[in-house]
Structures are given as C-alpha cells and as structure tokens.
Image (cartoon, rainbow, N blue to C red; front, side, top):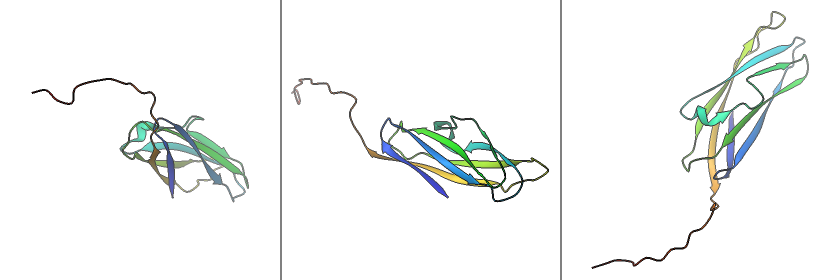
Length: 116
C-alpha cells in the first residue's frame, strides 16, 4: 500500500492510517519509519497504537514538504504481544509530490543585463 503526501511546497500534510482488528483479542503495534527520507516524516501522536478486539485504531503520519524532489520512506508496523497474540507485520510506502509552488514573498531589483 502507498500513502501519498501531495500538496504545495512548505505545507504540512497529515495522513491517518486506519488499522482494523478483526480478531477477538487486543492488538498492539509499534510504528517505525525507515528509508532515505524517513527523518522528514513523523508520528505526531506517538509510535504505538493499541487496537481493541473488533475495533479500529489509527496511526497519524505527518510530512512537511521542504524540497522539490519526491521524498520516500516506509512505515513499518510491528506487532507487540498482547494477550499472548501477535498480529501481522504491516508495511506502507510513503511518497511525496509537490503539486504547486507559491512564493513566500517577492523582491524587485534593477540590474543591467550585461556589461562589456
């Protein structure tokens, strides 16, 4: 699965990953960000999530678009044993794309085009 972070340069985008627990036991996961641009992504609500039986849990991933080149990382969710039950390890590809660029300000200056 790929999670896309698309927006204007210098904007912060938050995506929410929904995790469903179809079992009758509580599941817990540790979230890890790895890859070339992993430092540019963050988990603002912490890197652990507990999902009660037959319920949903959410992991928030935040990214601020700082560069024009696409950023890439991988979100890995590793299960912790709760009630003696392990869940499957989950992975998500994280990619960014700059959709537009808006200037932060403008400066006017005069200069000769060339000099002999």
